[in-house]
Length: 228
Image (cartoon, rainbow, N blue to C red; front, side):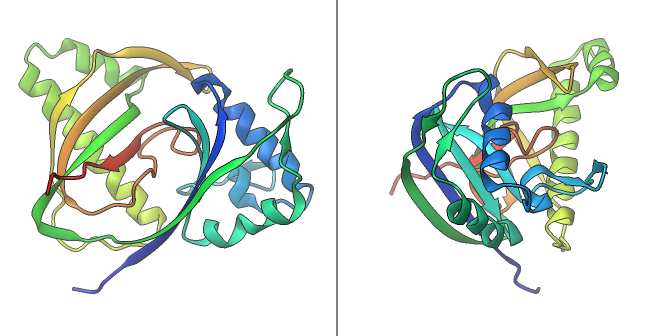
């Protein structure tokens, strides 16, 4: 089985932001980089959308603003450090100096294993208006959970494909628990947002996003650290 490693860089700021401010934070970073900004910062290509997995993602981790860079995004983020004075303007707020708390590089072997790994899942958007109706019509918890597990596997496969990874072996996911569904808006459409925990037999980098809105703080995963 070939080994596929993915490099990530998690940049966390001391500044705290709200969930709804993440798109504003993204816009401020893009503006700070300037007119020669790589498409990886905004995920657009020409006048249209870049239909691929986002390699620079904007997050709120433990309430703090953060940027997660993946693969080629690790190299491209250098443009922000070269061009920015770290004074960012979020929407109508006055410009604020963003102070870096930590920059953590990591290298993850993305692979299917015989073991399973426990993940936290935050602000996941599994249900669009179409499959939400189908989900609500299901009477049993088992049926609903199985539907969510299939969607989660699909999200993982899409992320792997976008990272250029060919998955060898069957990915399994078992959802352990979910929060009460919350309705949120994404691209002007209502979506159901869930927090939860799941187990899967694939290793994935911490803090990457899965599913819709991965570039703006949705579907964040983090592997649970087992007690020694």
